[in-house]
Length: 141
Image (cartoon, rainbow, N blue to C red; front, side):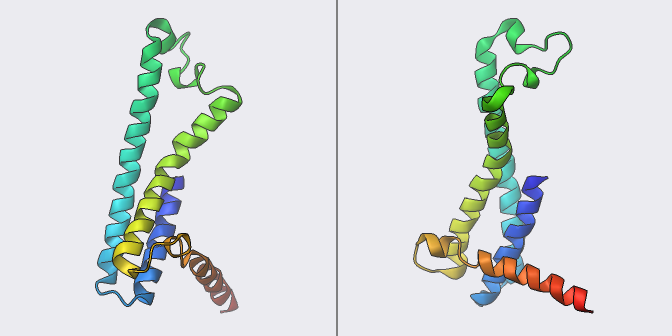
């Protein structure tokens, strides 16, 4: 769910950046960014699941299997504050890593600007201002 919302924002960001940079085939860049983001999120989730399962499998035996009908995900590792942090990491890290990779690709191939932190995440503020402005325009009609 969170990845889907971030993917929509990434697509809008790529579209706006490609239009400002006057890049040809804007819709191809947008579609490529959406597909690339989706694939990277899927791969990073797969990696996270394998890492989690490798830690849990090391425990072996009854500690790994569901006890008394409980879900093994909720047994032990995901309780308390550290469990909360693990859950947040598992949920957000694929989207964040994918977003940063798309930002690098945007900088390298679409805007072709020098590599700085400001350029890497440039136009995000303008994107949100454009979204805000679109709601104002819709409400005024």
